[in-house]
Image 1 (tube, rainbow, N blue to C red):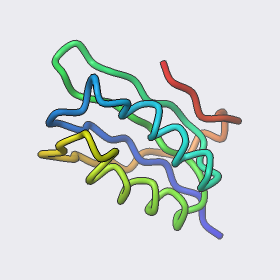
Image 2 (image 1 turned 60 degrees about the vertical axis):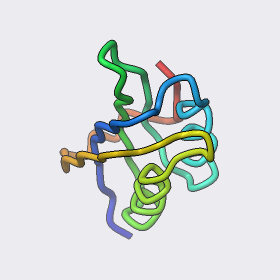
Image 3 (image 1 turned 90 degrees about the vertical axis):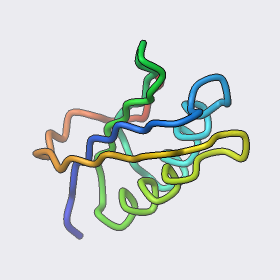
Length: 91
């Protein structure tokens, strides 16, 4: 299976709605490593690395997020796989 790395910027009502917590749960459930964090401008930033199908499933979840969130936009950038992540963390 091919490994991929995707960087996301998620806009909308995505802070104060447990977005990071549920992103971490989803990533761990899918076997994806990387990180997620809030940005000062109200967006959420995330990096997912792992099996392409697992990363795609996690990215798809981010398009709606938890039930309290309102996702307006997800910007996705493919990046080079580093292999340096062994877990998924909230930064």
